Length: 290
Image (cartoon, rainbow, N blue to C red; front, side, top):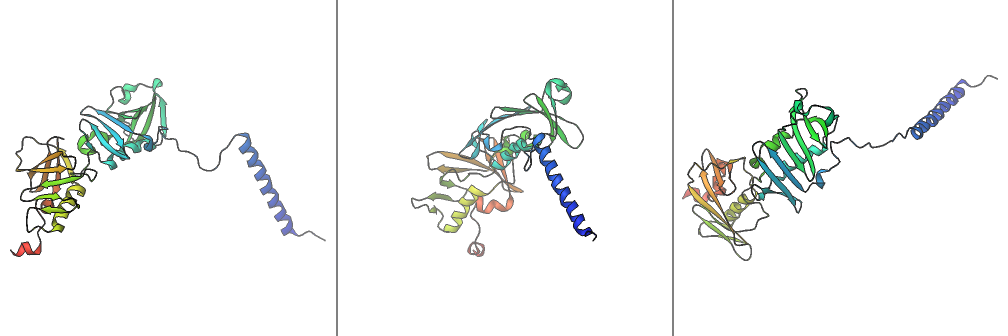
């Protein structure tokens, strides 16, 4: 009686599967082939979360930042809160893949712009020097630990923007506790129960709270260096719980609201619509009918 061709074919397939399993197992053991997740080849073993200190040096500026209680602060040349989002964008360079790399002693560093780099970034004790681009695929040469890497060119602009690109865009970050605020036509003071009171009888508690919230949470559209050649129209003073004071200058209200910090050398630019709510109380329907 002839054998069942379906059974024979099934036995052959099973035999081949067993053979392949044995073969691949042998190869894996023989050549130490690793399965599962393979770590990516980043340009450095240092991880962004491990960085506690940053130093940036370019032809135009030098600055340092430190991580304090999980948030970044500018330490030099000014002492103030940093823009954490932009700092993390800088740290993201540590996640860049090292697709192409060459030993630094086997290549002419000057030809790659690395003898006099465009910028030098120090993350803890790891130094990264930024050279020229290769003009193909927007990739830049970066020297790290005597090795030249070719990586995506998206980090240098964050290093070159200086203080105005790395400082916090809020006038008074919530980490600083305010006690008083002196504006153009109204003064606000926080009482012992935490309520903000105004010297203006017609100012409602909601209006007072809105002004304080804007000063602590509203982010400027952009920042620029302080233009000391312009004459401010008035002084705005913040009183702090620790007894200190911070002075601001109102430089302009149109076509945009510009508030300057002369001590930091920066000025904050807001849309003109924020004049009411930052400098003057927001108008209510009752105000508009008076």
